Length: 249
Length: 182
Image 1: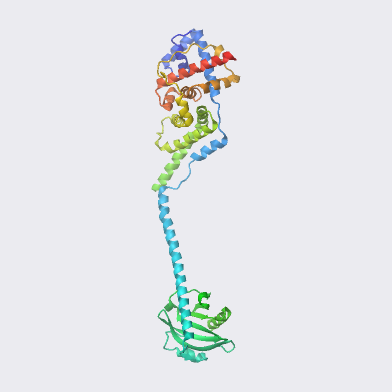
Image 2: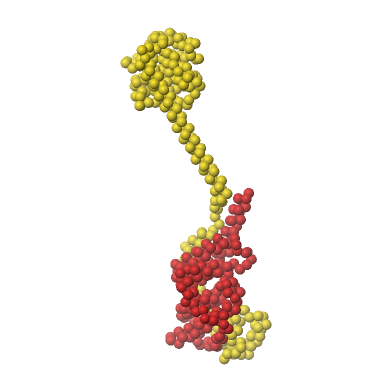
C-alpha cells in the first residue's frame, strides 16, 4: 500500500524529517502494520548497505605513506634559503681568494727562485764572478761591511769538501744582499743572504728543484735573514752546505 | 623572529591537518575505491586528495565541515580523472531534479538480505550510476546528513533527496530482480 507517508519513510530513517513530522509518523507507524513492515524492511536494507558499503580497506603501508607525506616536518624557509645564498657566494669567494692567494704565493716563489737561478748563472758566466776572492771566511765576511745593511756568519770548512770561492754584493727585488760562492768538487754553489723583511715574500722553507733549470735549491729564514742555497750540485750537497750555514748563524 | 613565527604556524598547520585528516583515512579510501573500483586508482586518488588538501589547508575555515571538504576534494579529483570522466559521461542526466517517484512498498521477503548475500548487494551498488552511488554511499556508509552530502557534492539538498530516492529505488529493483533469479 502506498500512502502519503511512503515517500517519507527513507527520510524518516535518515533522521532528516522535522521534529513534528517525526512525531506524526511515529504515531502513524503504531497504527499502520503495512507502513511499519515497510519501515522495518527499509531499515534492514539500510543496515545491510551500511555493512556492505564498508568493503575496502587500504594496506598499512599505504596508510603510513600518506601519514608520512602529510606529517609536519621542518623545511627550509625561503628566508633561510635567501640567507644561505650569500653565505654560499661568500664561501665561494673566500675559497677563490684563498686559491688565488696560494697561487700568487706559488708564482712569487717560482719567480724568486727563477730570479735567483738567473743571478747564479750570471755569476758563473761572469768574467769576475766574485768581488772578494778568498777562501778565508774571515776575509770574505768583513768585506761586506758597509756594503749591505746586515751581517752574517760563515761556517768553518776545514773538515768538509766545500771550498769558499769568494763573495759579491747582489740584489733581489732591489734588496741588497750577499752572494757567496762555494765549490764542491767541480760544482759551484751560490749562497744568497738577504734581510727577510726586505725580500718580503712568503718563500716557505725547505728544498725545491727548479727542474726547468736543473738546479737544486734550499731556502730558510734564520735570525731575520733569508738564505738561499742554489746550484747544480746534488741535493745532498746542497743540504749539507745549508746545514753548515744554519749551525753558525 | 618572523621566520620563527612562519615555522611555528606552518608546523601547527601541518600538525592540525594530520590530526583532522588521518581519522578520515579509512572512510576516504573506502569511498575512493567505490568510486574508482580499482585499488591502484583508489590509492592514487587518496594520495592526491591528501596532497591537495594539505596544500589548500590554509584556505580551509576552521569550524566548517572538514569531512565534507575532504570528500569534496576527493570527489572532484575523481571526476577529473580518466575513470571519473568516463563514469560521469555515462550518467543519465534526465530530469534529475524532478519530483521523485515514490517507491512502492518494500516487502520484507523481497529485500531481506543476510550476510551471505552481501556480495549481491555490493554488485548492485557497483552497478548504480555514479551520481546515485556516491549519494547513497555518503548517506548510508558515511552516515552524512543531507546538508553534508549537499556540501560534498556541491548540489542543493533537494537534489540530494532526489538522488537518494532514485538510488534506493534502483537498488531495490536490482535486488528484487537478482533475488528473483536466484
